[in-house]
Amino acid sequence: MREPIFEVKNMNKSFGIVKALKDVSMEIYPGEIRGLIGENGSGKSTVSSIIAGIQDADSGEMFYQGKPFKRANTVDAQKQGVSMIVQEIGTIGSITVAQNIFLGRERDFRKGPFVSPKTMIKKAQDMLNRVAMGHIDASLVTAALPLEDRKLVELARAMQDDPNLLIVDETTTALSQAGRERLYGIMQSMAKDGKAILFISHDLDELMQVCDTLTVLRDGVIIGSLEKAEFEKKRIKQMMVGREVAENYYRTDYEPYEAGEVALKAEYVSAEQILENFSLELHKGEILGIGGLSSCGMHELGRVLFGAEPAITGQVTVYPSGNQITDIKTAILNRIGYVSKNRDEEALILRDTIGHNLTASALHQLSKWGVIPPKAEKTFAKKQIDDLEIKCYGDIQEVSTLSGGNKQKVSFGKWVGNDSDIIIFDCPTRGVDVGVKATMYNLLYDLRNQGKAILLISEELTEVIGMSDRILILKDGKLSKEFYRDKDLSEHDVVEYLI
Ligand SMILES: Nc1ncnc2c1ncn2[C@@H]1O[C@H](COP(=O)(O)OP(=O)(O)OP(=O)(O)O)[C@@H](O)[C@H]1O
Ligand SMILES: [Mg+2]
Image (cartoon, rainbow, N blue to C red):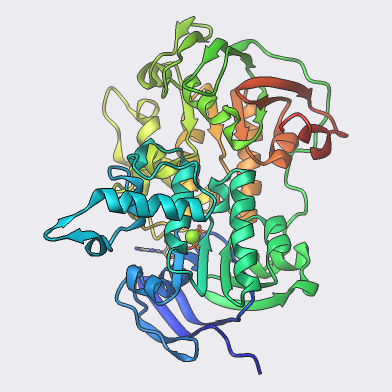
């Protein structure tokens, strides 16, 4: 009989009244890439982080290579061969890449009483080179790196002790195709060497392609596991949600489209390094999709349009006022909303409540003679929580304690419920499970039908094609192609303009 590399037995974990894990038992075998799937808040990150030594279970057992598994913290777990890339940003922005890679291991670089930064940087650079991430400079302050590279630094850190079990929690949504390929390559070669991977994602296609087996969690309970031969979308979704989920959740109308008035105009906008003399017009009552590879400049475009990043050349004008957008304050005063891809650092106040985060951008709309009636604030928050099925025990729960996908829903709900005329969505469904994605798409479509101007920036082509009236494809910071909504438009037609 095969011996598992890792085994979890009857694990329980509660946070106050929330039972995050109920008697969870699972095995991970050598040579296996096991997918872990479940709705937002089903317990995936909780069980993973307990394995990796980030937190402890209330009860239950763990076995690693046949022996009881004890670990004091994550570094200790890593040194024993169990490492994890966390769902949220797992690096500290204010220190160097090298310091992040060797976080908790500074002692290894002691020379007398001092830590030698030079040796540390050299070793970190060697390690980055070894895992084909030599483009990242180990001496840089981590905050200077794009989100993707920050995730790759975590990958390099996780690989340093040659793990026998690597846990990858919802990492691929932060990576470009090239970054994904790099990660898949590492996972496959580990599996070939008889090691194991626990892989978490909400992308069913990705899971079905990458994984050998899938384990499904629902509300903290293991529902079951499927072998590759048994993979079937409908079945997996049903196991996740407990009911049938519609196959297609995008809008289904294809009537000829007439552009409304211009709401926002960018003229010859350039941004740091990537975006070059880019122009666009966003109209009322349209969803304008922006597609491309992660590094094509589309995220920078969103930031420039919202005034979060200065334009080096060109200008952004909002209509009918004719005001120019140069900073966030002006953008908000002109009723522009923005859902950032980087939710933890740009979109949410993690230490504040769900209620406050949801209402922050709608205070102006809720206030009566300069005062905000607490009841109105509560009602507003409750509606968003219900509509988006935000899994929480109430609007007073702190955002930092929500699961990743539920945080994303807060970041989305914050702008959907207020009276913005223009909303820029950057990867709005990132990390959101299939059930709630449908709700988000419905809300986007409603906003469009109310005459709002929607910019939908996304790395998921199916989403851009499925939801947009018009699509701009960016490549290397420039427009490479424009498409109009069309029933026959497929990913295949678009892909050649990305690369
Ligand atoms: N520190 C905490 N305090 C309170 N509740 C918590 C805490 N951490 C997790 N939870 C709750 O435990 C449940 C499981 O969360 P978990 O993060 O494991 O979900 P998940 O399956 O990873 O979801 P997602 O797909 O959204 O990432 C959620 O209801 C979450 O709000
Ligand atoms: Mg999670």
